[in-house]
Image 1: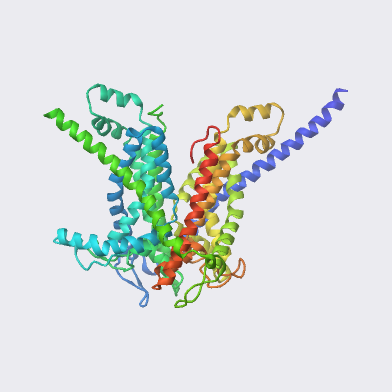
Image 2: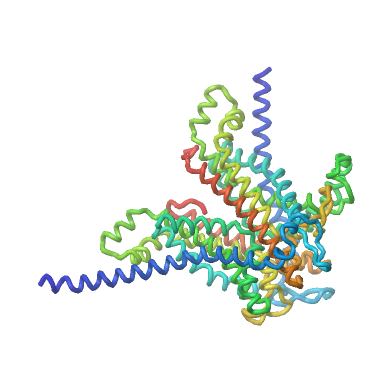
Length: 319
Length: 281
C-alpha cells in the first residue's frame, strides 16, 4: 500500500525536478545572452577598428587631421568637441538641476513635488531627434539673432566669444545638451536629497540655521555622493548624445577657441559619415571613434552607479 | 544686520531654487507648445496615407515611415522582450550571487552605451553579412537596446513581490518554475508590463542606431530585408534638408512621434499608480 502510493508521487517529483532544471537552464541561457551581447559589442568594436589601429596606431588619438581623401584620420577634434559640449552642458545644467532638486525635495509639498518630478521625467522620455528638431528651428535662430551678438558685444574681448554669429556651433550644442541632461540630474539628485535623514535637517534648524543654511551646509553635503552620481549620469548621457548634437553643432572637424564656431562630436561624425565611408581604414577609423566613445561612457557610467548606490540606501528624509 | 543678511540670503537662494524648477518644467511645455503649433497645422489626412514627394513638389505624407517604424519597433520588441523578460526572471528568482551580479552590472552598463555605438554593433552583425541595409538590422539594433531595459525592469518588479507569496506556493508543493509562472510573475505583472511599455516607447524614438542599419526609403519598404523608412530618421533627414515643405512635414512627424511616446509614458505611469506598493520606474 505504502509503496503503491509512493511511486506516482516520486514520478511526479522527478518530473517536476526535470521541469525545474529545464526552466532554470533556459533562464540562465537568456541571462547569459545579456553578457554575450556585451562581449560581442566589445569584440565588434575592437575587431572593426583593427585596420585603423594597425595603420594609425596611438597617433590617431592625438592627431588633428581628418581627411578621408588622403586617408589621414585624427580623433582629436571629435574628442575635443564631445568633451567641450558635454562639460559646457554640465556647467549650465548642474546649477539649474541641483537648484530644482533642492526645491523639489526641501520646499515643495510632497504632492506638488511628485507631480513636477513626473513632468520633468517626461522630458527624459522625449526622443533626441525631437530636441534636435526644436533646436534647429527655435534655438539656432535665437542664438544667431540675439544671444551670440550679445555675447560678442559684452564678452567679445575673450577668445571664447569671437567670430561670426552662425547660430550653429559648440555653444548651441551645449545648450541643447544641458536641456537634455537636467532631467537625469534632477530626478537622481532629488532621490539623494530625500534620502537624507530628517533629524539632520532638524538639528541644523534647531541650532538657529535658516532653511537655506541647513540645506546648503548640512543636507547637500550629506547627499553629495548621490548628487555627484547624478552629474556623472548626465555627463555619460551628454557624451553619447547623437542626433540633437549632429543637428546643431555645425559639423566642422577642427578645433576653434571660440565657442560660437562650429565643431564636431564623436557621435555626430559616426552618424554623418558611416554610410559613406569607403575603404577599410576610413571605416576602421569611424569604428575606432565608436570604441573611444564606448570606453568613455563605460567609465563614467560605472563611476555614476557606484556613487548612486553609495547614497540612496540610507533611509528616507521625509515621512 | 547680520540676521537680516542671513534672511535675505535665505530668501534669495530659496527663490532661486524655485526659479530653477519653473524654468526646467516650463521647457516641457515649450517643447509641446512648439510641436503643437507647428505640427498641428501641417498634419492632415495625407500625412498618414501618402508617400513622401520629391523635394520641390508640395504635399505628400509619411505613410511609409509610420508603417516602417511599426515594423522595425515591432520586430525589435518580439526579439527583445522575451529575452529581457526571461533574463530578468533569472536575476530575481535564481539569484546565485556572482553570475547574477555580473549580468546585472553588465545590463546596467549596456543601458548606458550610446545608441550610435549599438548601431555599429548591429551593422557588424547584420548589415555586413547581408551586404545591404535592412529593416531587420534596425530591429536588431533596437532589440539590443531593449534587452537590458526589460531585464532590469522585470527584475526590479519581481523583487517587489513579497517572499511570503513564493513561500506559500512552494509550501503547497509547487515546483519552482510553476511558482514563478503562476505566482511571482502574475503578482508582479503590472510593473513588468509597465517596464516593457516604457522600454518600447524609449526605442521607438531612437534614430541614431537606425541611420546605418535600417537606413531610409522614399517608398514602401520591401519587407524585413530591405532598407526601410522610420519616423525618427525621416524627422532628421527632413529637418536638416533645405526645403520648407520638408520642414513642415518634419514638424508633423515630430508631433506624431511625441504623441506616441508621451501617451505610452503617461499610460504606463497611470497603470503603475493604481498598482499596489511598487515604486515608480
